[in-house]
Length: 252
Image 1 (cartoon, rainbow, N blue to C red):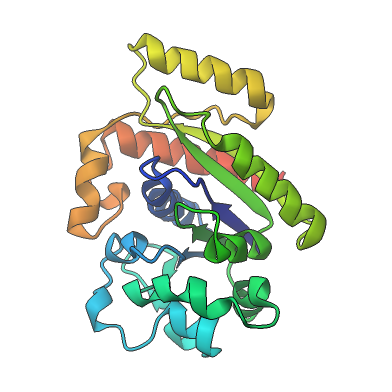
Image 2: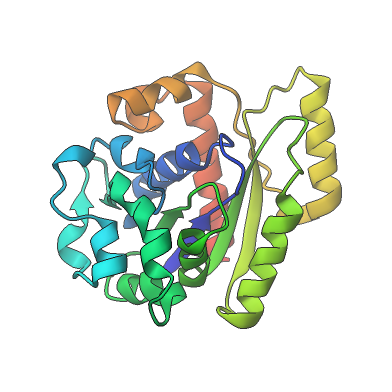
């Protein structure tokens, strides 16, 4: 079982879009995939058709109250894809986890009870206790980076956090790669960002770039991944390619 944290403390860089659509295409490639919605906004949950307001229990209950995780996993209508949903109450977990023993390991301990080929953790846009739980539970980190002027801002802090987690809490944690999102090839700025990332990350910059695509933006409002909403769109083709690239790195 491979667990991948999709993380970047900057908001709006495509973490949830990447988590959902990468998960959907990995499922189509025959992998049994679980998406863990670790973001209190719950966009991965709603983006997969989960009615968050009707949840009797969610990831909050697993992390804070020690609830059994398996009964909370929901199968989706998409091939080989399940979700561990969350609700807005998860925002309180940052405070409620603080006094607990082994608070950084709560998610890792829960996920160890499950059996999937690949687990994708949609981390919140912060470096608090929730994201820390995601990094401790993960084997790899995938960093979506928006193709814009401030793309590299804050990346150093995230990489330093990953290094500290590796040293103190999870020596197995490794960087799977950086994926460029909302990319517009005809813009010189996008080319500059790509060049800077190539300079900083080398082979860790994934070859697949996700374009700015209106169909990708529309899909979540219908509660489906892009593979279901418009499989012929440029966004769909890019995530299909990304899934193959990620799977090759995971299995390689």
